[in-house]
Image 1 (cartoon, one colour):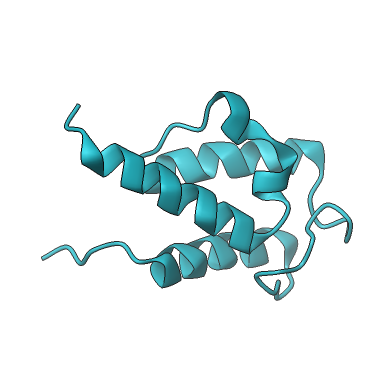
Image 2: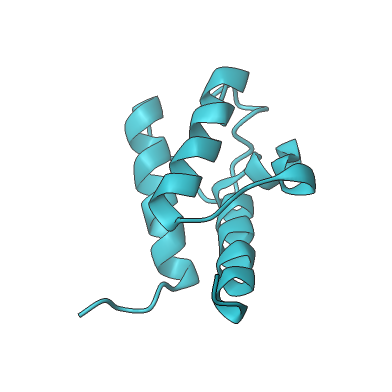
Amino acid sequence: MDQPITAEGIEQAITAFVSERVKAEVPADQDLFASGLVSSMFAMELVVHLEQEFSVQILGDDLKRDNFRTIAGMTALVGRLLGAGHTADA
């Protein structure tokens, strides 16, 4: 039985992915770009990973760097996209 996706679950999944890729523990509020942990290439990998992991589409204004600056920002983005996606059956 699938459990509902929670913000905590989203954050844990994103944290696990990022921490594994950068080989370091990453706090949810750490600026990934300012700290040098994320390059522009890895930022694109993050977009693809989030789309595949959470079955969302990240388009247009959602592709702003600010949405990917922190794990907390990515968690909020995915949560918002999932909320929007669940309101309409496509």
